[in-house]
Image (cartoon, rainbow, N blue to C red):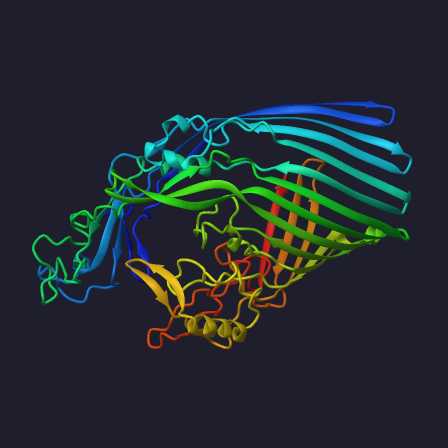
Length: 583
């Protein structure tokens, strides 16, 4: 069947066909107007301004229109349908999922919002050596919490909404800063401010699309289904299909409906949802020595509050799916924290170029691997969200960067950059890969555990206490965790030296040609690193037991991805040439 309309077939080792997650589309029509008035008088420079953004958005969530088939084998082993040939219609599959209205896309219009802000700031030369920056900003989103849709909420979940839904008029952000220069070569600076983040449109689409009515799935039995006693429903004793058995290509959705299995969950926006807020403090010093040597030391502390998390709060019987539907509350309930120290040195070399060196120490904590869309994993304990508190997947404690620009003869410019950094943490997942080991800190690898021996000692203690509670499709209970290899790794340091050589040819004031040559990872160091915030470490992070030895996981802690791609810092050694014409 055509790829564009074929269902996605999920084999044990690969996926085929059009993904059930498309088509999806978010359209925005945005108008923006803003202005700033600046008035200078004596030692004051006063700025007044404001702006208005009009956002008109709609969603097309055409998911599961083609459907998804869960196969239980990669290749057919014999002619199960007895048509004289062995092909994909002989494959065994467990279930088939498809929208209950497969010819009708899920369109969610009128996701409109106005973002309004005004501010005032005064840059005040309080003394000859002291400058103060004093400001206040106020902002508001008129439809931040899906207020316009709220009257259409599903009565099934009315009891989960607490209080009333209204606009938030309290987003005031004061800012204060200073710069004190005891002499022309030394300055001390610092500041404090409150800043607000925007709520992304996906949060609104979740409440509208997953309200228990808009998106309903039909889950039908596959030909490998068994009854409650474990007996095959569609298979004869010899393994052939019985009459009426669904076939993977010709009739995948013809099996009987599994009542209640099509629930997708109901998402509700908490009535007290607010814009995430960040308070930031910073303090620094800058010292110039001689004519071109500058030292800078800066410290920063960020405290984020009212960040969003999805917390399961219960379930309801949904007549649309004829079964229970879990309810998730999208609430402003968790925090973030970041502390950083930055030391930099810059040496200007006049017409010959400059040299820079910087060291950063940083430490971050939050409650989810993605603070704006924190719905990949449910909290281990919905009643104790603090158990989610841990380092983010890209938490890098130490980072050193050496860089510079050298102006060479012939108008050539040479720009090297050398980056060295410590490893990032790893989330350690249960054997089925669905969620992290519940009695571990989030992203525990490389933080709570630094060696395989430390992890194995923890696993032994956990197994001696009865194992961990795991929920898998069709099975729930306590499981033993496998031990890992003594050579298992959680993270890898980063080391990459990159070069750039370029020259600009000027044919006129407006016609210029840039010739560029670049080299990445000159030393060809293998930098293990991931590309997803679900596993940024680059090492296999699932405690998957070996098929022949369930008490051991030989795959855990093995490298699976590297940084940089083909052309990029940290990837395999690579060279590229480029030309850019400017006119």
